[in-house]
Image 1 (cartoon, rainbow, N blue to C red):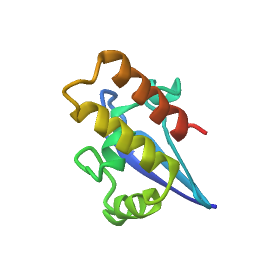
Image 2: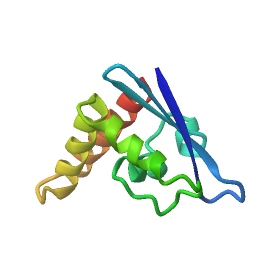
Image 3: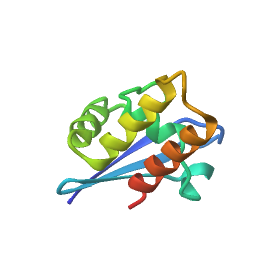
Image 4: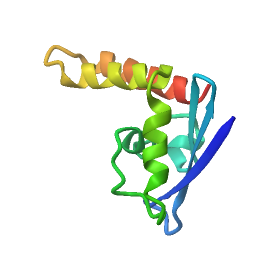
Amino acid sequence: MKELTLLVKGSSADPYELTFIKDGASLTALCNCPAGTFGNLCKHRVAALDGDGTAVVDDDAGKLNQVMAWLAGTDVEAALAALRDVEASNAATKLDLTEAKRMLSKTMNS
């Protein structure tokens, strides 16, 4: 099992801790922001999984690259792709988007 933590800026004065755990083909993403604490989808996890380091306050840029490498082939990658497909679809309903977000959040918390 491998683990790494990124510090990300958010609405709090102190940075949030965004932790990724890679165990075999499983990837878990945890964030201690209010949304992440309650198991909901948070923008910090999604941004990191998209390779967006804008909010990362760590000096080690290699950590984000490692997260991207860990993502490949996981159920989280598939759930993220499903979310992006629903977002891109003009025919997507709000319910479809909510369900895709719930599934992505569920896979990141398992």
